[in-house]
Length: 312
Image (cartoon, rainbow, N blue to C red; front, side, top):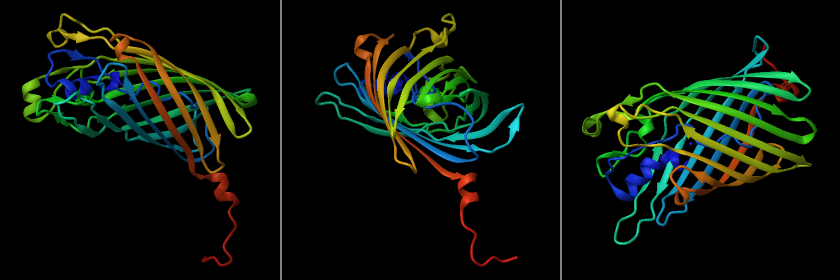
């Protein structure tokens, strides 16, 4: 979920009101790099991805995002696909770097939570595929800056996410590609209260995302490359809502290093945008940190010793 994901908020924090309708992605671009898609052993898994970045433009805001995810691999199958419900509750942090004498603002926002399911297929020969479908439910913070401009315009509407992914995980490799489409349920949603009444309908566009991973494990270490891209889809500029709409899109590349501690695994990666629709000064460098931990697995529970005394 990011500079473009938070572009409207960053503009509001640094410049106040604006008449431009700024595109904003829903899913964080790059959120999926480093992960492999496929059936997990029965159990519950926690994945937390934190990132922070800043664009090249002078006085750009620092934008941080934390995405905690719970995945339940149920062990049940439908048409050969393992059912894996998933829930995520992202949060966003914006710290401005305004020039004097403008005051700075530090804002934290609870994003729309995501609820969905992964249908994961084992295709054999270490090849797997998955289909993730779910919704970002429109109950996130409706915070505003200067009493007028919402920080995240995409919070005004619920949205539907569809992700198609394929992975090869043989011989220590993780070669994964995932393609995501996010559909805005209401492309003219309104915020509530006096802010929503003053702004009227908010124009939001659908978006597509591509996340690529190519890493290799050496013992407990994982090393490799990642890349991701995002673009919003075209809108009807003849609609007055989109009269001043600005397209959004970016592509970034980076390197990843991971380490398996046994009870949990960590990944650290840095990405650099090499293209951005908003121009070179909007290009961003972002640092990422991820923890992956199984909270419960059926195999571990089955291997646990029986108590000396049991009640029948």
